[in-house]
Length: 163
Image (cartoon, rainbow, N blue to C red; front, side):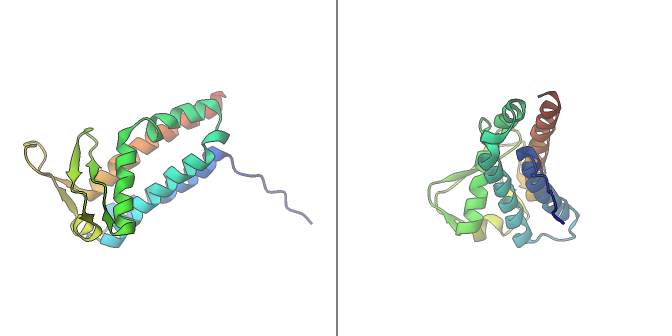
């Protein structure tokens, strides 16, 4: 007896990896205490979503691709978030980076930022002169990434039904 498994669509593969990221952010949000390893893992899971998108981009339907390009290719927010994964996985980031904020601002990091210093606390400290934001909770930052990604995926799903 042979099984005829249907190959998942490119969008379904991206959504699968996105759910893995969403689950980790949910776990962090519900955790009673900050866990550095979980936080690093969340950024790594987001990086996998970005890689999956890049791998599947050519196979997406035109409407799906257009919806996801807005987030993955044209928005600075996810690109800067990926720099945090680079720091987490490689211990230091030597070219300078920024922590993107949903406000479309960012927190500049020095070129020699280490994973230990970046992920040692549950909050990013925002340097002056920003009087409105003193610190950003890491889980809030991850949640902002999640919401933006979710918005793009919803538009891609809507486009998939129209294509």
